[in-house]
Length: 297
Image 1 (cartoon, helix red, strand yellow):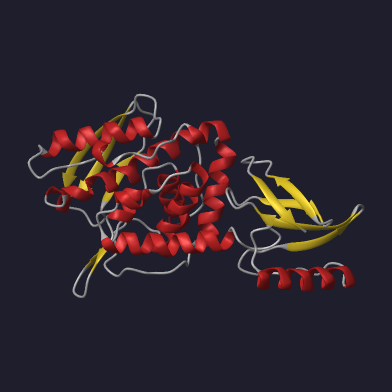
Image 2 (cartoon, helix red, strand yellow):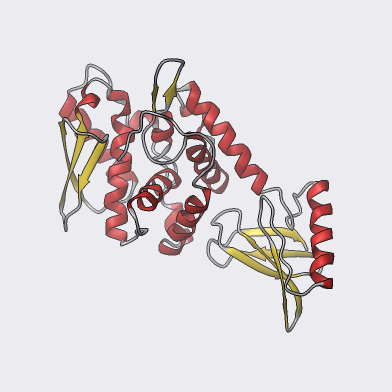
């Protein structure tokens, strides 16, 4: 798990984040996803300055193992000087060994965040789910940690002022907010009361705005007037020029088939592409996550 000194902002990794959410839904059924509700609660991972360091770390690790539905995986936590924030040794089990940076001895409020990321590595190892390349695989891990209800801890570990900054994980703060907002909409949660960091709260609001923008684009009926006008223009162009495609903040594309013109667009929940005929009002059901979307095609 990395811990860069310079905090990058914005949404540079959204394509990989969306692919990670789709991959997670492909590996876990919608029913299995629902078992990760509610999110891990602040009281379950609280770590006071008076708590014993090792016993407290073990307690938090057990809570996260339980939340992530790992089957009796015993996590042994130790501390040492290291370049990164944390690392995990992935073996066949039944024990997993996590090493945390020595600085967490005095930054105990963030131990839960570091453990959440590393224990998700254990979960992904058991699921045999990975992306090629270290960068994309770490983004996958951050995304899954957040989407399964433990990653709000990673966002809450983000703090920044005029002279210093701290961030855990590979996603930007806004991307953590984006994934967390997607989970909040899918599972009907509101994580805003859990944040202790004002910077984390602000990043969540920016990420949530991006997620809401994607949920209000054509051909969805929630699209605004300008989006509908753009969509109508692109639809007319597609009819006049077979094979034409349209791109935008919520990418849709037109295609011609035996049954006429169709439009494809990503599901607002799992980001898998959905294809529906262009024939006015239709209800589209995602075949992956089973979300039902109201469309005006």
